Every structure is written in structure tokens, then in C-alpha cells.
Image 1: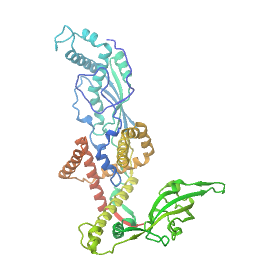
Image 2: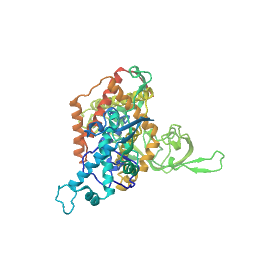
Image 3: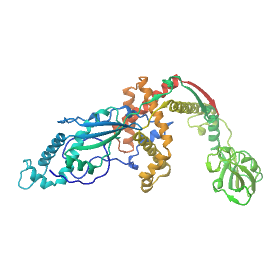
Image 4: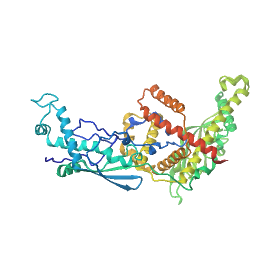
Length: 529
């Protein structure tokens, strides 16, 4: 039988294996699902806000979907050559012998005979092959045969990588037109499949994670006592009444409304340039909140009066949060538009309930605030410890990272980032579409490659420790967390896939179990900045 060729896409991904007919004669059922704004889930949002955005890649050690497929027996063995490629990638060169192709052809003819309606033949009645081919067309029969052969033989071809292949990483690289041409001329089918396999983690030194020595740097801002005092002061200030200053200049404790401008001079003194990023109009400056301005800003304006202007030089520190201003020397001009002082009530038990509802004394307020801050301090301390441990683990392993694993982790992070932007800025559908187009996602992945790969290393290290130490999570805990996540989806009327939720919840719980184990066994020292 002579079958002519056509030219579908050059490669395609396989998400699942559907062995049953009927078979489409116009297109392959395999497709790569691109990232879209609709694919961002609440659970991804949860992951993106964890201390180190840790998502354990347990799927790397789980059997791929291939092993779940019931293989349809073949009348002859396939010829499969396995070629190891970089980054945990394997290429399988597959040749399907004529006897298998012929068997698939007979099945396709039989299936079409049952499903098509040809005038003069009752439904379900066998239709002669030549009439069927003439009715459907040679091209349609050939395409259906190639698809049928692929669907039936691929699970057999993948047998050597069962239990190692990563989900959704399987891709046929041979063009469909090339497969059609080979099948038409030789009555065999040849195709190449590439698949990412689970990476192997190597510890340097071996079992080094069992003897971790970790130095954790803590910010003085998280000190519970200091934080509680600061919170009490903040709440106390909200009870104040603002009064306009009329007969004196700015003092510590006052609030000033300022117009600030800044300029900088070229090194040769030839040109004066405005620095818009360093200026502000109508800036409400609380003199007790010096963290809102650069160091040294308050002293030159002490004593300034309403309507007065002062000018002074000041340089931004090298560690300033805006990178383009770091270390920049400027000449500041400050005009005081308005000046206020606070009229505060007496700090006594009469205002306790206003400071913290439910409290009847100032002592209760202080104790309650301190208790809350102690909890926050411990949480921040635990997060800092976990992050320091993860940094150590990343440096202790050697591992190749499959590209599919990199793509998955990167897209998950980008999804969380989009959710954060959406919640802060309320993007419209057009803006979301622009941010989630393939080009924007690809740029993010490449710009963040090092960061993403480091996170994957941490995840793989944690997953390896979970297996090595035979750690366990209880079924009750898993079920409870999955139910909580599902209820959140239902509450917000969002679509969800319970199987995916369970997998991600399990990853989070396993990560927590490993980090708990590491904190108990590591030699941890804390230093405060």
C-alpha cells in the first residue's frame, strides 16, 4: 500500500498515554501545555511565601505515568537504543518492526470499519478494506496508523526508564512527517524519544548533613522586647491629637510635612543634575521614625520652622535599599510646609482598652504585646535557621539538574510572583496576559536561573535526606492539611485538582519534617547584627 507524507509539527510532548481508539486522523493528541495566568493556584501562592520558597521535588523519585499504563502486548519486540545525554537526559532511539506495524494497521482498519458510516453498509457491518481506504483517504489512514503505533509502542519503549523518568518530561523529537515517510516506504516506524530522569544526589562529604555547623545571623529588629516596646509606642501615638506648631522650630517627636529635592554635581563640577528618586513632595516625616530617611537627615533640619527652607549635603549609604542611589552624594533642599506636635493622653490604665482591646491595665497591654512578639521572634528565628541550613545543604551536594525540573520550579515561582503582583496592583486581564506570555516567562527563567537552580538543589537535598533517614509523615496530618487546602479553594470558588494538592501538601510536610530533624541534629550558633 502506498502512503504519501505530510508535515505536522517537528516535536511534541506526551502528557499521558491513551491506548484506546478511535484515533483522530487529523492531529496528534500530544501537546505541551503553556504557562498561562489561569494556571496560577492558591497553593502555588502559599509555596511562594514560605521562608525559602521550598518545594521538594519528590516527583523526581516517583515512578512516571508510563509505569501506570497497562502495556498492550506486541507480536514482536521493539529495537530500543538508550543514549545518555547531559543534565539527566536520556535519548531512546526506537525502531518498530514490520510485524508490529502491520498488526496496528489491522486494528486501525477494524476500528474505522466500526465507527464510520458508508452508504450501502449497515452500522457495525464489516466494510471491505479498499472501500474503507477510498472513503477515508490514504492520508487519513496513514496518519491514524502512525498515531496508533506510537500510542501502542511508546509504553514498551519507555520500559527501561520506568521509575526514573520525570513526569511530563517525555518528548518525541522525530518529526511526524519523517515518521510517516519511513512508515510509508519501509513499513516500519522509527522515532527518537528524550526523557529527563531523576537526578542522583552526591554528598560532599558523604553524610555531611549529619554534622552541620550553622551560624545564623539574626536582625536586632526581631528582638521581642524591643519589638514590643516599639509596638506599644506606635499604638500610643495613634491616640494622639495633632496640633500645629506656631511658636518654635522642629523638635524630636514632632511631625513635619516636607518638600524635598536633591541634586548631585558631576565630578568635574561641570553640571548639576536633579535626582528625582531622592526627592518627595508633601512627605510626612515623623521625627521618631528615622528609619524612613537616610542616616543623618534629621540633624540638619532640627529647629526648622513652617515655611522655612534649609539646604545641606548628605550621601546615601552604600547599603541603601535603592541600588541606583547607593553611595550617591547629594545636596538636599528641604522646605517645611507644615509642622505639628502630638498631644498625648496620659499613659494609664484608662487607655488600656484603646491600646489593646480586652485589656484593663497597661501591665496587661505590655504583657500581651510581649507575648505576641516572642511568638513572632521565634518564628523569625526558626525561618532564619532553616534558611541558613538550606544554604549549607546547597553547598554540600553535587547534582545535575534536568531542564524539565528547572522549568517546573521556575514557572511555579513565576506564578507566585504574578499572584503577589496581582494582589498588590489589581492587574486587569490584558496586563496579566502580557506578564504571562511565553516571552515574559522565558526572560524570568533565564534571569533567575542561578537562584532557581539553587532552590532545586536545596529541594533535592531535603528530599534525599527524607529518604535516607526514613522520616515519616502521618496519614492523619496529610489528610487534614489537604482538607484545609481544598476548603480554601472551595471558599474562594476556585478550581482545583485534589491529586496535585495532595502532592504539594506532602512535599511541604516532608520539608518541615526534614528541617525539624536537621535543627535537632545541627550545631547552630546565633549572632545578632
